[in-house]
Length: 232
View 1 (cartoon, rainbow, N blue to C red):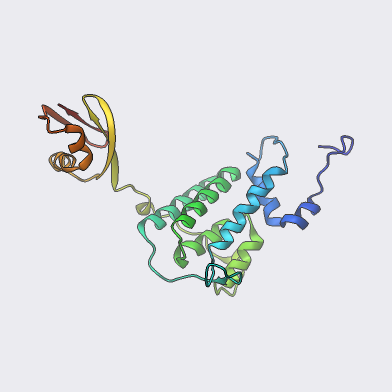
View 2 (spheres, rainbow, N blue to C red; view 1 turned 45 degrees about the vertical axis):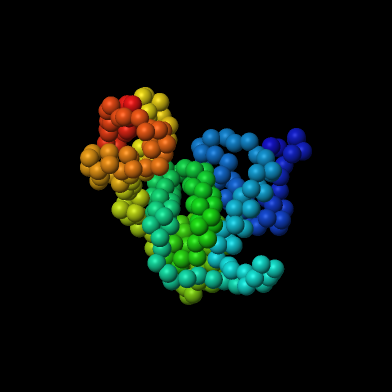
């Protein structure tokens, strides 16, 4: 972009229409900081929608037709799925910041917010740490949410959330189940399950019964952490 080409975009106008946080996030989302990137203002709408969706996580409407939503967080214990989403995000953002890969951090924020929205998460212990994670990227909206959550000091003094690997370690494995070498379905089984217990679990599953159709099993092979093959 240049003045001679008459295609200069005034950042002040973007800030007036979308806010400074949207502009900051969009610039980071364009790509790696060390590379030249195409400027397309159409992408700004997507980033702006993300911030609005993130904001809505913290508000609850009294009823379906209400327009006066209220700030709402619960102190309920987070589920294993919610903790997994949070700690995957902490690990990703921490790694990306050190590598200056801000664009992939923004993508990770979008994924996490979509997942938490689908779960209708309202847990303080999950959402407030994400506010801290997002604050270097979108400081104005995060400062506002931080204040609404009851904090008195600025979010800039908050400690970076600590990543705990135990919350992201998979306890189950989704085995592809093959019949005579052809994959027919998948089944999720605990990783610590012994080979004999895995065989018992698969033979009792509805999907396996359907594909066996009463036929005699000649061989059942379980490769732990890889595949299950049934020969009939």
